[in-house]
Length: 120
Length: 111
Image 1 (tube, rainbow over the protein chains, first blue to last red):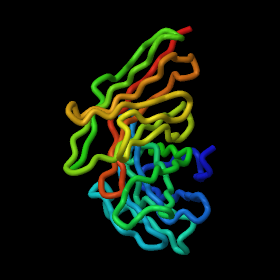
Image 2: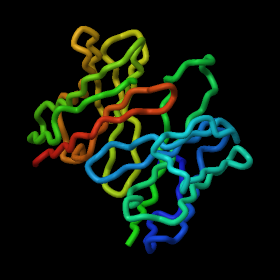
Image 3: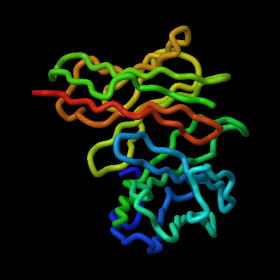
């Protein structure tokens, strides 16, 4: 257990429905990331937050996707009007910025167990 | 953009034999390289990282990795593999804070 939790662990939905996933990072971790992993591939970056600010979004994140981290703690990822191509494992990771200088990027990220989405 | 490649989809070894999982990287500037392991139905677990300094990095569960700048490689190694090491291994490079992962290598250690 890395200390990062995700809910639900599995979600089956019908095409066109909306779904929302939650991630609870390690307490006091400043950075929170969302990745998507499809079968046979490594995780791909979707978006990340520093505290409550969303600092970057991947081109993979279409307009149907939205993420929030309202109080700089937990985060939600919502997918509207789901499509079969959205079926994947959605991973959340958190990272602490403490102890490193600005501009460094070498702290490890701690990953949650993921939410597996199946769109029928 | 930074990227990594894992040339082997699968690695099979006998328990007790050395294990090597290969990774090559392509970066501009200094590489920040990571290895993660993923067990079935579990999230990725951090094994080790290379930031700077000693080219031989030691990590969790007896794993180590050798950074080779001239060959742009960062291979993961374990001197004596265990059946419990069977899992999916990912090499990653830090790319403006976000991680870019390889496609993964499935390691099977047979008893």
